[in-house]
Image (cartoon, rainbow, N blue to C red; front, side, top):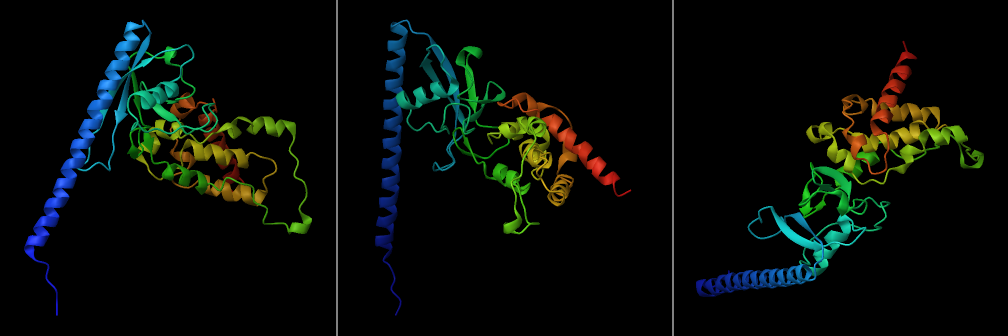
Length: 292
């Protein structure tokens, strides 16, 4: 025998849900108004004290908000002190004005690569970029061509997948464990690949690349640079070098690069990414000539 829920009970449950949602919406509005009043009070205090301030225009978006919150820019007037970086300013805005402001950061020393942002129209590391080097208002956005998770945080999964696809590690499948020997590297070879090892996986180069923006399967400058690091390493076995070159020569590999140098311009570690890609193209040509 089936049990039917009385319509009156269903109506009451629906009404309770609507009431709860309305209460949450009102509480959120009150919280935002309170934070706005606090922000205005602190800005007034800074102005009265004669402190220098920088105006930040920060991209805000939370796709999980009911009704799909529309992207917008919020203004933050941040007191400036000598040596202040974009990341410092964002942390101040979060800690003093709006605790919901979301962005990634970790080491604050340009090593982890987690705080790559789009600042005043260019890819930069927040912890490395001095406010004093920027024109006001300082416009801060998430990396372009990436899916926004929230505010300044983007989904990096595709970027990591591309890096992994070039198999960025040494492989010694051709020798049994008992016969493995120390693999030494000459100083000259180390010097050759040194710059390629400086990559911090920030994604700035991939975000700046027009080819990557239109071709989701393109390996991208970061992954190709990582492949360069191993392909040009004299400790890499010939079989693995051949295997890696086959990965790079596929349709969405090195030949998709159009030599625009945009990746090289934005790299926070000054890696000559475009030059590395061109060198791999030359290596591919030489490799194929062997079979003619």
